[in-house]
Image (cartoon, rainbow, N blue to C red; front, top):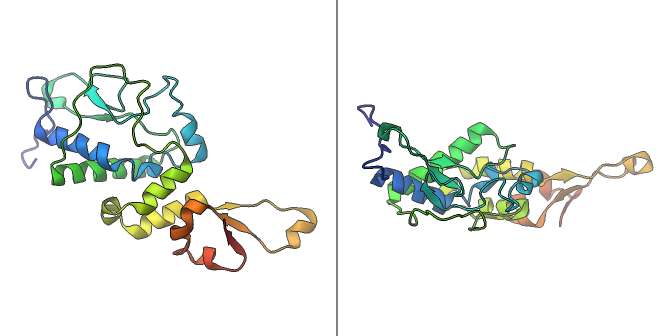
Length: 202
């Protein structure tokens, strides 16, 4: 706040309203912008449910099996860790997505689910489990798009979803064909290159 106090500071080892609402925003809106946390096909190989990392958006106090963890420590250091991030995420975009989702939670006073004390390794939520679904979620996003701008999200999605086919020899003289995947149909309609005759929307 304006006085420099941490609004997420724990009260009697419990999350205050601001921290709960921030977590509620993460649970609600991170699935929409998950592409910014897991931007490549290989990102999703980490989310295999083999206890290498959480694959859920449950939250808990010092619970390392939840995707959102509120660690114990000095009350004034209250915070939430987001533990469902691909190793190949752009840190600036990832932080922007987390802050945007949390801000929406604060603005809308979204209450999260109950804090979990259980082993959540095998639990799943509505997080995308592949790149195509992450592209769909981002394309259908409204409130996250309002904060991060639709134009930026479209450009980012187009960079994640367009794969040039390699050509060599005689094939090199053929018209270049670039694939715009099915999940990007509505995005592709806003990308000039995908409207060209030498592009295929599959």
